[in-house]
Image 1 (cartoon, helix red, strand yellow):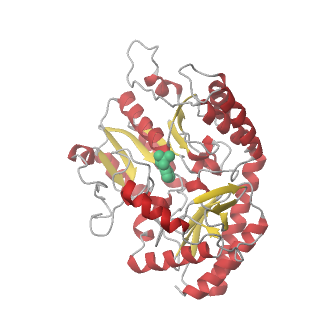
Image 2 (cartoon, helix red, strand yellow):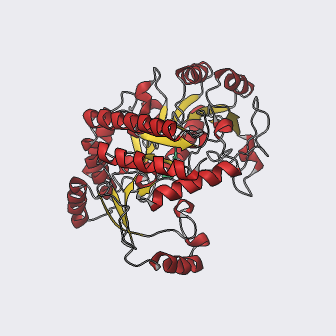
Length: 442
Ligand code: PLP
């Protein structure tokens, strides 16, 4: 089904709901990412790679709940197994067998996963990695890439919103706070390095070598432009951390979808810790951290001294464990390869329609992830990918055009694929994208 002929069943329902929501929640929502002008739309139901809103319009879903869905919506096997678990109970103070089964499954996917712990979100997974690194090394500082998004933990969010007004010199980027009230001590303890610039990064790291607990890096950071980390950059960070007794932490909260054992399968290094989230929950809230057993053991309550006491009421929730185990079992090596090939096809078709439309735009990404930039050439890092007011306006116009013509995107004009998609959805999308680019004329 294509969605251009969808008729709105009740055109003003979302606007009406939004008016009420505004009186109850700041901005009318609990996730700023749902906002769009003039009002957010509200979901009614979803199946496979299609979402239907409350007004009766169905769209192909490239947003996948912010990259968290790998098999689209309401996959029959996930629904069946979760329903069975719900009937047995959804949360216990006791541990469950499925937690062990899922831990075993995830650890079997990556030789670097000696031990694992589950948490409830990507934010919590990254936070727990940073705390584990500090506990293990006894050092206060962490290093991260300029502009990279790692969730809401104080240290992890530094520099996330850096802009030309405050980012400082490229050789020594500022630790830009995100929220008012971020303590000075937090900013002092976060060292910001430029992406894919090994030489500059190492010079900066050297200045803090005795104080750094870890270097945190996402191998395909969305806000940095969705450009893959270069082998040279990652190898340099591995060598530097090993030589200086600091840990290397990969944030694979999104990118775990790009390889059977994560995007790290494509690199010749093993991190000490990996943060995961999103798709490993099979559609339910989740996070996990895995890595070297001796590092993970800072959380071990059986040790004489627990360096990092770690717990969480809903961690390893059985419904999430069942959903995650089902989803990831379905996402076997063959499914990963097939989805990555579809991603390759999509990016190549997007490049073709950009060339046909003859507009200054480009596509970046890897595996099952893509991002369209209103720039003639792919950006190399956060500063180069930064969209000024004009570019942001054009980008929003394109996202709105795609939305109005049947395709849900993430508002940076990016998206992910799900295993429910085929060449058919890709062809439909690139056809509408061509029309959109011609109409918007970036
Ligand atoms: N790390 C990365 C790379 C992310 O993209 C996100 C969320 O978008 C997070 C961490 C935080 O995950 P969550 O939203 O589940 O807290």
